[in-house]
Image: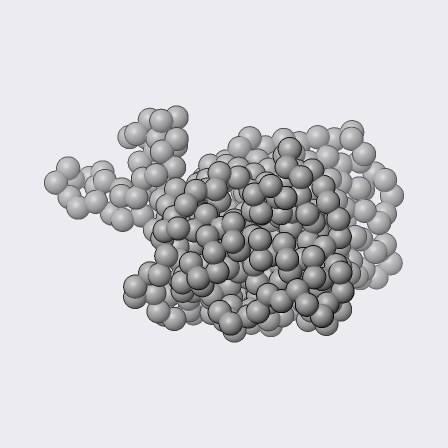
Amino acid sequence: MKKLCPNLEREDGLETVLEVPIPEEIFTKSGTSKAWHNVKSWMKPNNVESSRSRTKASLFGGKNIDIQLLLGVVGAPLIPFHVNYDNNQPISIKGHDIEVSMAKYIVKQYVAAVGGESVVNWVESMYAVGEVRIGSSEFWGGEEGVKKMKGEMGGFVVWQKKPELWCLELVVSGYKISAGSDGKLAWRQTPWHHSHASRGPPRPLRRLLQGVDPRATANLFNNSICIGEKTVNNEECFILKLEADSTSLGTRSSNNVEIIRHTMCGYFSQRTGLLVQLEDSHLLKLKPNGPHHTIFWETHMESLIQDYRAVDGILIAHGGKTWVTLSRFGEGPESHSRTQIKEAWKIEEVGFNIKGLSMDCFLPPSDLKRGEETTNAKLPYKIQSASFKISASKVAAVNVDIDQDV
């Protein structure tokens, strides 16, 4: 991945360090010179004309709306559980129900498989650099209408000290999303919206639990139950399940949106002990204003975790794929929709125990909006429209991790 941008105006000028590395494939497809000019335009601050064009795109659709959908859903999703990062957290299988004891035993096997307890607990901080390719398909009114979006490429860098102390920057086709948590609140910043905090307590970044942070994964599923077995990608796996309690769901709900349930499952290989697949789903209910019908949105996300390699004695997943299905229902069949998103990701670089990674690296943006209730007037035009033709902006609007924006 490219980490330096050459000076395009002066050959003897210094190169610019990119905040987010750019995949090499972008340059092989577009040509080096054209690609660097595109990167340079991404790095420029938004001027008046670009702001106007993006506003127009958000009102009337286009690629901007598709990018909002992709980044809003798979860019920086959070998990609905608190993860204890205490080194002394015991994994004891005694004195529990059989389902709980089996889950704790499977977690102990997982810790041993990725490198052992002492090596896993040695990690105090980490960073990862990688690339992504994201695309989507949308269906509405049964299967009558179909809209497909070609794959978009990008790169990301993520820093972490604890599961709830992290920072992510991701760039896809020139659109950048920043997200993070300072241990007190989780926040997100996008080109089409001001910085804003997620409802409820801070939560870990799902991307790090996709085989990148074994310690957090073990501590998360230490509180799970074993519900059975399943074959995933030709691997016989145990299924460990977690379900968010009503208190957690209530703190993340708002006046307009009720989160009915949120569950997560981890599939651990019986042969290797490693995490093979991560799956979670949640169901939202949009409370109607006036005579409108109640609308439900269901999101199902599956991540296939692959290509484990040893880094400083710890097995880290260096690749995988994520599939997301968003379903809208609750009214007539003509207004039902289903959107499918696929992300292929690859880790290029991982490092542990980063020197100088202080709390200042995780501070939220200065313009952060906290506890704001967004009214209908602030939503994109397509969402406000009385027409029930399904658009990507409607799907992005009900992303549970930015539920205060619904």
